[in-house]
Amino acid sequence: MKLSKSFTLIELILVVAIIAILAGVMVPFILSARQKARAAKLAQLFDTIANACRLHYSDTGRYASEFSNAPIANWNMHNLSVIPPANAIPGWDGPYIDRPLTNKDAYIGDMLFVSSQILWDFDLDGDGSVDKNQFTAGNSLDLWWVNEAQAKAINDAIDMSVPGDWRVTGKVVFYGALAFPVDGIAVYLTGGS
Ligand SMILES: [Ca+2]
Ligand SMILES: [Ca+2]
Image 1 (tube, protein in one colour):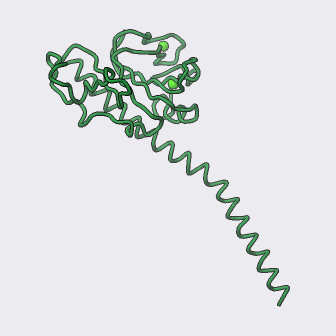
Image 2 (tube, protein in one colour):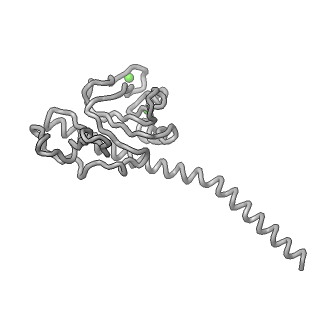
Image 3 (cartoon, rainbow, N blue to C red):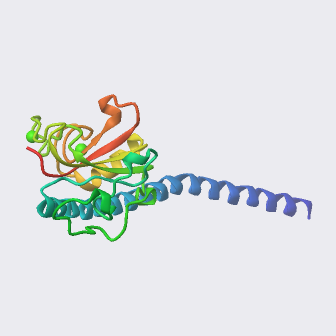
C-alpha cells in the first residue's frame, strides 16, 4: 500500500514535469505565432493607410498627417479621417479611412504616426543605395515603442525578400539601429523622390 502510494506520487511528479517541459517548449511558439499574426494585421493596415494617403494626395496635392493619439494639442492631426472646418484643405474629399486612428490600431507598439514627410532613409530594393531620402515630401509611418524582436516580425511581414541588413533596407526600418532615443519602426508609405 505504502509502495503504491509513493509510486503514484512519482507518477504525479513525472506528469507535472512533462507538462512543464511541454509548456516551456510550446509557449515561445505560441507567442511568436501571435506576434506573426499581429505583424500581418499591421502589414494590412499599412497598405490601407498607404492607399488613403495616395487618395488624399491626389485630391489635395498635399501629403496627409494622422496621429493615433495626440499628447500635444497641436499634434492632433487626423487629415485622413476628419478635418475641423477651421483647418479645411482645398479639394479634401475624405474621410479616406473609416475612422480616426487610435493607439489600439498599433497591434504591436504604442503609437502610430502618419507623417507628411519621409522621416528616414529607405533603401527599398536593398541594393545599398538610398531610394527615398529623409525629409523629402511623401508619407511615412512611425510606430513607437517597438522592440527589436517585434520590429523583426513586422519587417518580415513586409520586407521579406529585400536583401541587406533588415534594420536599414526595405520599407521598414528600425530606429534602434539608427540611434533614435525611442525604439520603433518607420514604414515607407508613398511619395517622395
Ligand atoms: Ca536602393
Ligand atoms: Ca527592412
